Image (tube, rainbow, N blue to C red):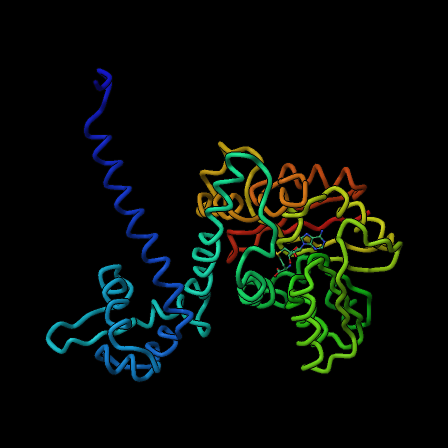
Length: 355
Ligand SMILES: C[S@@+](CC[C@H](N)C(=O)[O-])C[C@H]1O[C@@H](n2cnc3c(N)ncnc32)[C@H](O)[C@@H]1O
């Protein structure tokens, strides 16, 4: 028996929006698959082509490619010409689905299937508490490295370093830099290449991440960078660095307060702590303004909060928010903390903290 206030129109509108959720989730999975199989990269250089021509050019199975194209065409990602049974990826779409464009969303979509794979474990956690450790997420460091190359590495020189006045000149002259929670070390590898007079270090507790970073450093024959497996909350160094960075690495720590205190101790008195973390408010009601808020809360639910809880941690989560971030940096001893936004990057907030 429905309540007398039951609004049939509102109910129907909501059910239509749920169909849209089905469609968009399906497109997300298909975008990830298309990226991994190299179909977008192939299609971006092809004229309107048949499914057989696309499959041949990408060395793939035509039947699968044709079904995938069904999602892409009805999802308005790829154009279809029925008279010739040909398909074309518009240039404006290729700009956001390949590595040659502005941002490769198809690469970012890989997180959807990665995170979905831990659902059985998550059900257990939702019922009984606990968490899921990093090691349970297949391909996490690989995909994180490519995401980081797109977001952090590409923006370092033109946008992120200039946030700190005079920093580029100091890096040119030669300073000591540490990246905490460095993952596969993409940021430090880039800076070590750009600034040969400076010394760079990256710490992460993931052996997989550090192994990837070290083998890339070896390949590039970089003498000014080192990577070590270390717990961020126990760096154990004092007044050792002029610049310390963390990219997307505070909120999923088991002990974020310990990490910030450890970084404060390792920073020289005139040093700078430069942080990138998810843009959002600590107050749920303010996050309607974050265009990717449901995505970010879900990433947090299925990964960031959950990996922290796996180690008995605080479980801050990706949407810990700017208010909490500033409070925690101040509590760690940073006297000055300023917030910065980059025009092209609505996903992140940048913090500059000094002693
Ligand atoms: C979201 S990833 C970001 C990685 C990297 N900064 C990037 O932008 O690609 C967070 C990183 O924090 C690392 N991490 C988590 N807890 C840690 C701890 N206690 N000590 C050191 N690293 C930790 C993880 O292994 C992971 O590589």
